[in-house]
Image (cartoon, rainbow, N blue to C red; front, side):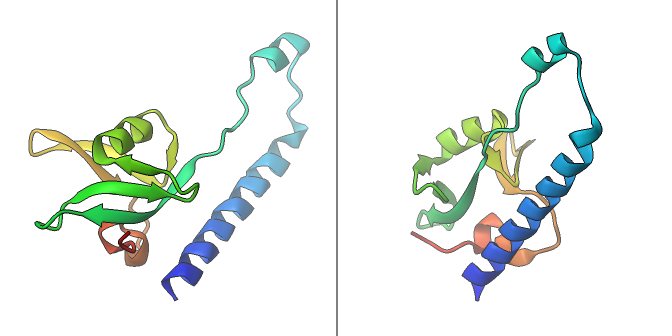
Amino acid sequence: MLELQMILNRLSELERRVQILESSQNFSPSYGQQQQMAYPTYQEQIIAVRKNENGNIIAVMTDQQRILQYDQALAEAKAGKLAHVDVFHKYGRDILRSEPDGIKENNLDNLPLF
């Protein structure tokens, strides 16, 4: 059931992106601007987590089956390479958390363990 919800969430996100792209088709930049435009890049999603004995997340797995240690995941999130996560500063350090969307099942603490 959790995997189905994750798939449905991803499908919804893809549909939203298609709508954005379709609505921007009317935009026609000049030749010089076309060369400078940045095209959207794929952002990996975190699909599972590894926790230590205290219940703290120490590593994440992406939908591309990459395993990132927590500090690597923080760096990639800051660089915009991970979807649906934010980095914020709390307790004197950077913290990785899922974007607040009202869906508890996709919160990092509630993702499957690996």
